[in-house]
Image (tube, rainbow, N blue to C red; front, side, top):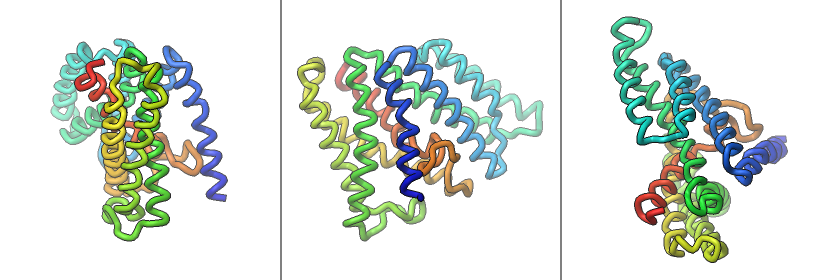
Length: 264
């Protein structure tokens, strides 16, 4: 039954893949929706630990950010202003404290900003191809880590945070991401002539590391607040953040690499 639910959960992801292929306003719309759901999940998780994030501020920030076309250079001034205002709120409303204010902003950055790199990358030159590096790196890392850990895993990686993860699984995930992105580059090199082949392998290697750190970061938060999953929206997988934890970190990696190293 559990196996069937995982297959059904994977099927639920199909609409996202379709929007990914469509790109443009479709991709931006689905990313915004996923960001709203992810923000709801992280704020709900924090409330389990009796924190009191000012969630309405997070949702307003997300709406404003997307209305500004995810322009980080301009939005940073809005974020700075709202951060100052959130520091004032605990002074006039004792229902909140400074930790609540900090978690409100940090959660928005973690979910809202990191998710937004997906449509931002798609708008780059050849972005409709390059965007797949995020998902190839994440999905192959997750898949190879699972099977490597299942058949070769003996020594645990971080038992205090994620008891099922093994060193062998981590190595398998790293290799899966590196080789997968490299093969993607070999196949697509004639279509993506503005990116040297070595960059695909390097991006894959970075995704193989950062994706797993993203997974562990999400697991660390869950363990700290005392929940098993962020939600039950995706059968067999949990919530949005359970399924996209590695993708969040890898979207950041791919964006920064393409922008500041590959100069795209």
